[in-house]
Image (cartoon, rainbow, N blue to C red):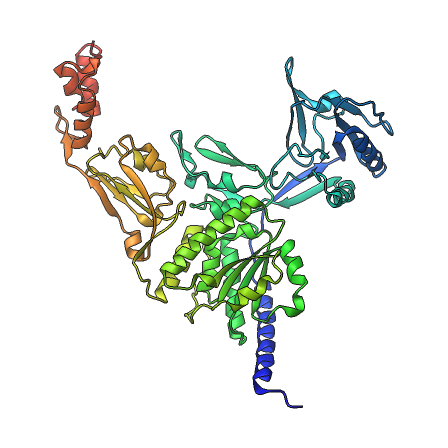
Length: 560
């Protein structure tokens, strides 16, 4: 029997792609990555079980036999008896309980009218003020985070999850380590300044509650963080960056992978990002049917890679890029992935590419790869050679600028949906007094003043659209416009937003303020009781040194 030529060619091509894929992943395995700091936990096995008394006591007897020190906090009024001398405390169903902490350091408190917050460990007779583990049998559970802290088990009414918890709890005794998944640089954080609220994206997408607001900055608890990565993906400035692996390592490995695949004769490389749990299981079920050109890249969490990685993959020569999410992907993380997908699609369309080359897939679909592999691929482009940088914004510009250089964007600038991290600001020159409050709060060095004259300048490449400049402006003269400017030179150059004549001190003649600012102050204070004489009005028009001398000359200087 003779095999048709077309079939033979297809079989041969598939073999070449599979061999190229194997060689590409071997090449990647030789690329070193930076070590990640570790976070340590210690657990002695002190377990608090909270729920209905009969069930909690029965489980405590089982778990005590497996090496755990059990304490039972029962809801409701009951007559259940301790089994195996398990300490038992009954609370009213309406009691206000609060749980904080993590594996090895859980603190459970009870709100009381007389004593305020009371430590439950003390009430129940535990030798330590904290518990190492918690088994919460309540529905709903006491903690409602998408991803609860390590050591906290809340199976709800799911019998399978309860069995899994009972199997894992006895193993949670000893010392444990995990990666510190993030790096935080407060100097470039856009969360706030001078008491003004700015960017809150990381707080909104963190599924573990590891991030809290702390005035003008944030605090990230490495013990709560479990590496979802959505905070780093959402952060517009790289104040939070993922480090398991670091951004530069991720892109460098991706570049090596695609280059090696091409060099070994592979064609139509289709990059598929998936996590180490649900995605791995989904692909394992389809391993024999996984096309040779699918380069499946396993990462700790799919939320840790965003549009800078996806677009870089396309710039490095991928035909298409897919992101495979699973049922275990937290809702907050999935929301950020979809947001990034919207931004990336708008950018691809603005450059003239088919947005379908970037796809979101779900393991719940019957065959998530079929639709992905049948989408029209990227047109042939020269693969980029840029190395990964530590800053996400740099990587984004490297990828976008390369992709734009391979085509002709229909428009030099495109509008983007909010809250896209790119754009310009517009200043109402009539209202702006050049007080420069906007410059003082800008976390991204997008706004500049001039040492020589009253000027306000703007660099669009640096603007992350955090909104601090808008909120700082006392004249409401600043407006943001999310957009993307494709011309790199225009994006990086300083643009004049406003300027004014210099006002010179009436006493010494030194230039010290914009004329419009002085005029505005005089107009606003015209009816104020402290500025009803000519001396007080004149003092407004003096520089700082001359103003002080004038006040002392007047015997204290405060008008009456």
